[in-house]
Length: 134
Image 1 (spheres, helix red, strand yellow):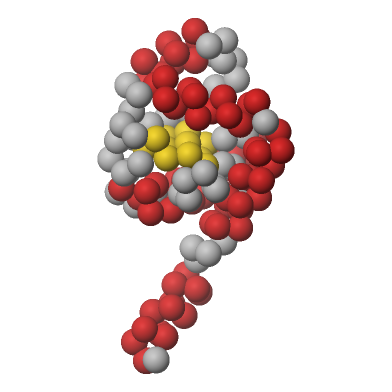
Image 2: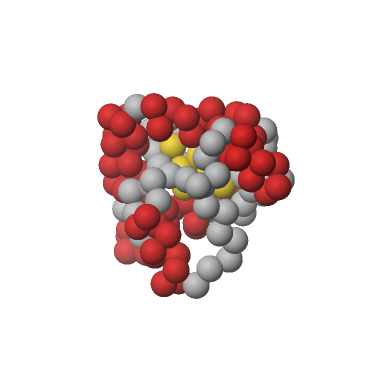
């Protein structure tokens, strides 16, 4: 899957603009978020989707497969795009939308940051307490 995406990035002339980082340290991750414009996850089975939430908290729109965690945390066509399956062409099409429309990118970036702010321990505990104790 990664090899297909790397090949596609090269074919589209995005080889220099796309980073396939793999596992990195927390400090490196912060640097990557700061230097990035979009977070992409082609994982077919992402259990919760913490990485997309972290990316959104940094103002990065997300393009991810519509399953598991991302399906619960990414708002399709508001904070990013949820794509079906792992088709690299569909993924590339979703990415091209951001590169072709800076205003749309700005809206999605702001929406992503705001939406990620809804997922924090204080709000989760408050919601749980209301549910338990009324």
